[in-house]
Image (cartoon, rainbow, N blue to C red; front, side, top):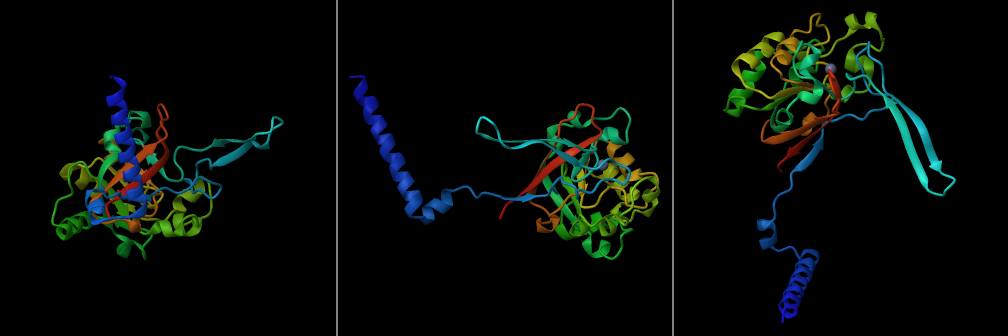
Length: 277
Ligand SMILES: [Zn+2]
């Protein structure tokens, strides 16, 4: 007697599954779409790591060395590489400790700061003709006026300058294709002004910030003040982002997961946005 109800239930379950399976394959009714959860669009905000990856002019560039690639003596195919990289190159995160002694290293940044609601500040019209452009307080207050809200608490703030369209052309993206200490003064690309960084930490409560240029301070910065201001408040920065043009000004989420380097001042970063369509 015990087996029969189980058998019946099992059969009913099988039938239901078959029915659902057929329904999904053969027809899409209005009922289906209304009960189905809408899947967000995934936008990849990361550049690839390769020989072309842009690094700070004094940093060691990316290398990928083949350990083995091909068919082994035992018959199976096998591929493996070694890679080397500086922390600060390509799409990466600046951990607070990068410019603020005693602050969080990359493995210590709470994941709550790296995953959550995001906004985009579009400064591309102002920055496109000015590689020395610094995002201003006005850019933030203009966004707030237009969007009829203050920058929400806990936001991940993305600054869209439009410079990722030059990547990986070093001359256009960095302002120079030279490398080494001498090249630092030749850097020209937009960043966040120290006044705006100061305004953000004193007047708003953001979780993280990112942009589509090599550094949160503009290319001509000497003392990296915006780095110091933000990182001192444990606000990490994402640099060398891409595909920001495809994002709305608000109403999307960001997931930014760096390599978990113990004690790291930064790390390669895979960052994506989830956009409701
Ligand atoms: Zn960095």
